[in-house]
Image 1 (cartoon, helix red, strand yellow):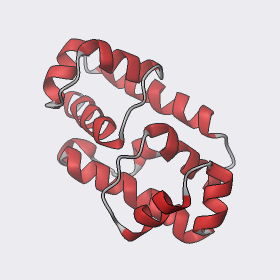
Image 2 (cartoon, helix red, strand yellow):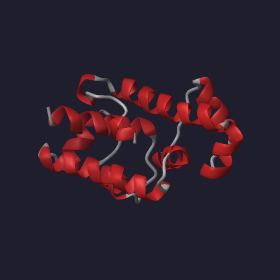
Image 3 (tube, helix red, strand yellow):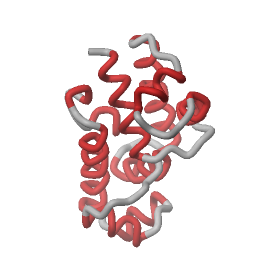
Image 4 (cartoon, one colour):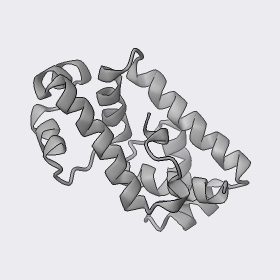
Length: 141
């Protein structure tokens, strides 16, 4: 799962976290092949080729979970729910509200958008996930 791709996310930058997410996704594509992952994950083959090549993509969390689900014995929606649950639990442990989290990410998103991301009501990019994940991990050191 993306939440666990690095041992100490608080010691990484958001860019490093995103790169680790993308490496994990590229590993799935390398293992199963572009065509198989595209068919199973319903992600465009050209996007998967670009991912495998290390190109800069604006993948969403939903696309990432669909790719990871190809390699797991679970469905993408359940994996996305678990990711959001882990983030919410981290916010609770770190005593973070959505407005503080939004401000500390350095992203141009509001607390409401962070909340919508955490609830799965807004498409969230891997960039945004990495920034949110890092802030939560830093607060929980």
